[in-house]
Structure formats: structure tokens, C-alpha cells
Amino acid sequence: MSTWIAIGVTALGCYVVKLAGLLVPAGALEKPLVRRLAALLPVALLAALTAQQTFGDGQALVLDARVAGVAAAAVALALRAPFLLVVAAAVVVTAGVRAMGG
Amino acid sequence: MAVVRDALGVGVAVGLSGFAFGVTSAGSGLTPLQTCALSLLVFTGASQFALVGALAAGGSPLTAAAGAFFLGVRNAFYGLRLSQLLSLPRAVRPFAAQWVIDETAAVALAQPTRRSARIGFVATGLSLYVLWNLTTLLGALGAEAIGDTDAWGLDAAGPAVFLALLAPMLKSATERAVAGLAVVLGLGLLPVLPAGVPVLVAALAAPVVLWAEGRRRGDAREGQL
Image 1: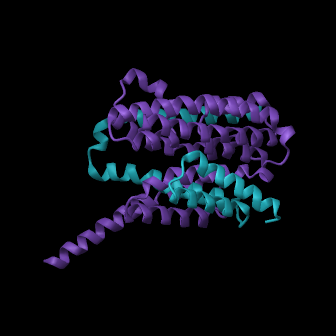
Image 2: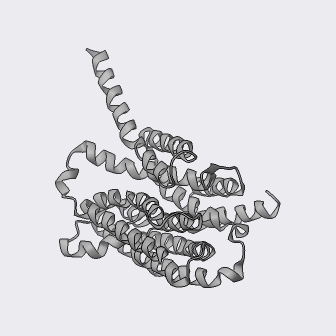
Image 3: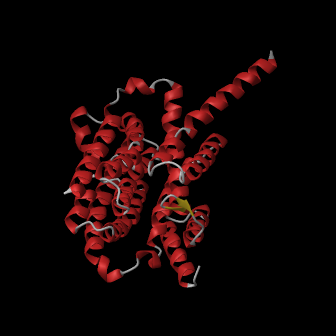
């Protein structure tokens, strides 16, 4: 039951913030500073999420095979590889490094 | 059309990581029904992963939901930009809202015209919603067969997806400074703050860098006088 409560609260909360963003009046974005900020916030969030999911293990920071995988993804991105190949590179290299005992 | 190819590429790649979510969720003790409900109703990957992780760690339902909610707050900022770019009719917004996530925002915002941005948003949203939910179901049912998902490297799919979304946004020194500061904050605070909160604090990198930039520009003007 408590799992369903968590699911319900999360679903409602996540939907409300998605909708709130769409309903904010367009006038709020006319100031250059607000527009600049709205463009930079995803940069900050995505960078932090990438780093945390690469180095984070619960609340600890660790160096494991994921680092090699994400580095491979970065190389693929630098070579302008398509999205699927970038993700595949990360998965395959991570699995490979783990298989070798990394 | 290039925009449809991009959209489907993102949709398919991220949809496949729904498999990783299904497996992880089942491994955290959620039933297949609960796992599928999350993908259908929450539909924002980072929040879903955060929620099942917190529940598996024994967190209370509301604490777990709070962490997932904090991660989902960023979608409001995507919505802020998308509503201007797509200029959707008010009646459509409650339906479009569920698709306002990292990937649809990244594809739509990268388009040169409103028409291609709308096509990109719908094509990414639809392909991702269908595949994410199908692969979640497969993952939840197949969890026992596959065993240890980490051995398959599936835990690297998430950060690779985020990195691929981030890379095209790093256009100037300002973006790179924001990203760099956000990484330092996100990693530095991870051990000391509750799950989900460090990411929100890392978002402060954006106003901080903008403020520092404004100050520097102000100083440069004074120097010329």
C-alpha cells in the first residue's frame, strides 16, 4: 500500500510541475535575464545528473566501469555518432570492463 | 525529414533504457503493475529511477516521493521554454504536459522553426511514450531471466543519455561554466544532502554564473570610463 502512495504522490507532483511550466504566462519570458536563465537551467541539471549517475553509488562517490562507459559515450559524441550508438557505446564498454574484472 | 529521424533516434534509444528501468524496479521489490504504473503516470526517467531506488533503500513513501519530485521539477523549466517555442493552444496543454521531459525538450529546442519543433516534440514524445512503457513491461517481466543488470552495463545507459542531451547545449563558455559548476555541486553535495536535493542545488549554477558574468561585464564597462 505504501508503495502505491509513493507512486500516486510522485505521479501527481511530476505532472503538476510539467503542466505548470506550460501554463506560466509567456510574458514571464520576455525579460532577457529570465530567458537566459531558463536556457541555462537544463544545462546545470543535465550536467549534475550525468556526473551523479556516473560517479554516484547511493550517497557515495565511486570509480567503477561506468566511468569507462560514459567516457566512451563522450568519444562517440565527439565523433558525431548518432544517439543510439552513443548509448550503445556506454553500455557495451561498461559491460566489457566489468567482464574483465574492472 | 531530419527532425523525425532525430526524434525517433532519441525515442528508440531512451525507450530501450525503459528496459533497464523495468528490471531495476522489479529488483527493488515493485510488482509489474506498480512498475508499469510508474512509467505510464510519472513518465520522467530520472524521477522513476530515484523513486524505486529510495523505496528499495527503505525510505518512507513520502521521502521517496519528495526526492523523485525534486528531480522532476526541472521539467517545469523545459515547459517554460517549450510553451513559448511551440505556442500550444491552452486546451492542448494538459495533454502535452505529460510529454514535457528532457528528451522532447532537447529535440524540440534544437529545431530551427516552430513547425519542425512541433513535429520534433510530438514524434519524440509519442515514440518515447510507447517504447518506454513497452520496454518497462518487458523489463519488469524479464528481470528474473536477466539476473544482474549491472553485468550487462545497463546502468551506464542513464548517464550516457543525459550526456548526449547535454553535449549540443554546451555552445559557449557560459554554458560550459554552468555545466562545470553544476558537476562540482552535484558531486560535492551528494554525500551530505538527501537524495534528489544535490541536483536541485546544482541548478543554482545557472543563476550564479549569470550573476558573475553580469558583474564582470559591469567591471569592464567601468574600466573603460
